[in-house]
Image (tube, rainbow, N blue to C red; front, top):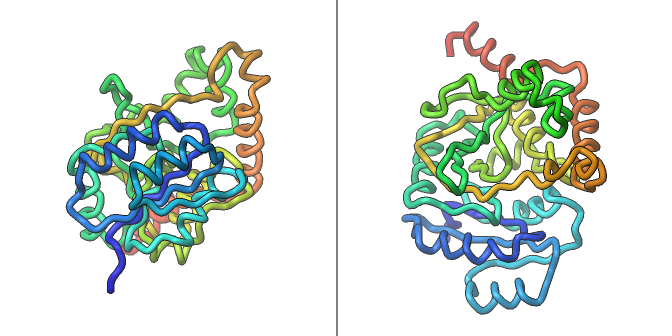
Length: 280
């Protein structure tokens, strides 16, 4: 018996009020394919575990100690049986047809290892979910008033790819880990999330390694989802941000990422240069 077409992996930590809405949204979208849904619980509470068992008995449920997002996702990846894996946040609403779009695109493009949908904010505005690799100052600029100065805003806007059309399918450096549609076979070759990143930059690093392994990472705006995203590490005044544990997780992960890839050239640019020279 063959496995499901897609394994949807969701890590729960604090989003207990949204996870029910997300799972109901999956049912309403009713994707026309064989699915399995795995929830990995980083913060087990009686309310969440009871709700999942009562309202969503078909879900495969795992509990683990909180060692970070990537570590929890790796549990799901190890147990997933699908041809494809959707790394999925518990605060996203799946639009009808979006999963079919992602599936069909990957079936038609075997050179693509990861594809991400267009994400919209709750008000329908565009959420910038595909990015260029960070310059050293970008994490600081996004969390301080310096990012509102003209030169700072220019650097942040370039990082967010605001100069590029978000209506066309494009190669990108990396995609926000809120919704990543990837091949199980490719993940087995490239390796799953680097668990040294407790939170943040694990998605950036994964996309980097996919490019290094010869797989494209692409943004597919034809597939649309709504993401109730809140940048918690950027909430409040600069003093509140500096006191936030999320901010320091972000800074620590940034340091690890820059150290891990120090001296290496952008793998997307290298891959595209190779393709242009060979005519592929």
